[in-house]
Amino acid sequence: MASGLDQDFYATVWSAQGWLSLLNKDTTTAISAYAHAIELWRAANGEQHMLTGWGYMLLGKSYAQAGQNDKALEQMRKGLNILDQAVGSSDPKYLAAQISYSQVLDQSGEHDEAVRVKNSAQQALKRLSRDACADCTVSAFALH
Image 1: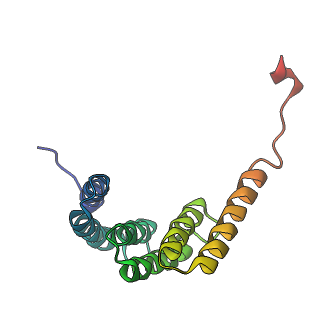
Image 2 (image 1 turned 30 degrees about the horizontal axis):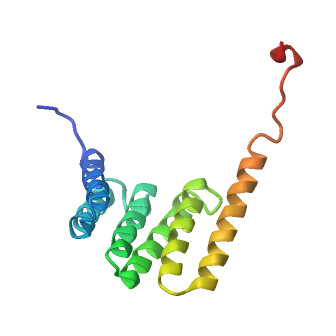
C-alpha cells in the first residue's frame, strides 16, 4: 500500500530482521538477513557508504555469535575499512565498530590485539567527549 519505498527502506527492514533473529539466538536467519541488507545498501548507496560498512559489522557480529570467528573477523575488517573511508577513524560510529571488533578478536584468542584495539577506541571516544564542548560557554544569566 505504501509507495515510494526505496532499497534503503527494505535494507533497514532486513537489518531489523537480523537484529530480532540475533535476539532470539537464530544466527542462521540473522546472517541471511544482514547479508541481504548489505546487498540492498550496496545497490542503493555503493560499497563505500557508511550503511554498507555498518552492515558488514552487523554481519560479522552474527558470524561471531554463531561461533564462526574467522568469517566474523573478515566481515568486520571489511566494515571497518569502509567506515574509515566513509566517516573517518575519529567518528564515534567507527570507534564503536572497533570496540565490537575487539570483542571478536578477544573471542578468537587474540587477547593482546583485542586489548590494544579496545583501549585505543575507548581513549579516542573519551577525547571526543571531552573536546566536544571545549569552547562552550555558559552565561551566568542562564544559571539564574
